[in-house]
Amino acid sequence: MTKNRFRFRAWDESFRRMTYDIFFFWKKNKITVYELEEDASKSYLPNSHIVLEQCTGLKDKNGKLIYEGDIVKVAHLSTNLPVGYHQKFATFELTSNRYFADLYGSDANLEVIGNVHENPELLEANNGK
Image (cartoon, rainbow, N blue to C red; front, side, top):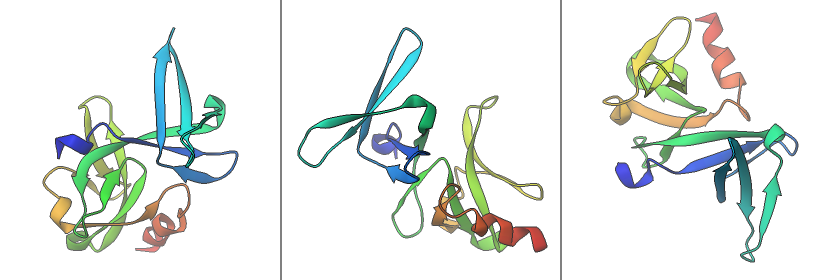
């Protein structure tokens, strides 16, 4: 679990795409984010258009890494929930208006089915239940 815990991905609002090959650094309280290109070059991603999402370090039942912002299907609740980060308790959680679950310990019953940026309709389906 721990070797993937400090991976990040970036949602680029301007191009509406997810980028997994990134690196970033802090300097004077500012984050600078770069995308690694296939030819080993790098390109700057404007901070005002980027949403950084951290890997939880867990994998779903199919072996796919679970990131903050993912939407997971929770088998025992028969619902889809977003993965979020709880600042106060410094932990990842699954939460909606009707449900709350600590992400850790639940990974065997989870399946990543999308993310909140590209697939918001997967969460809207829960509103009618």
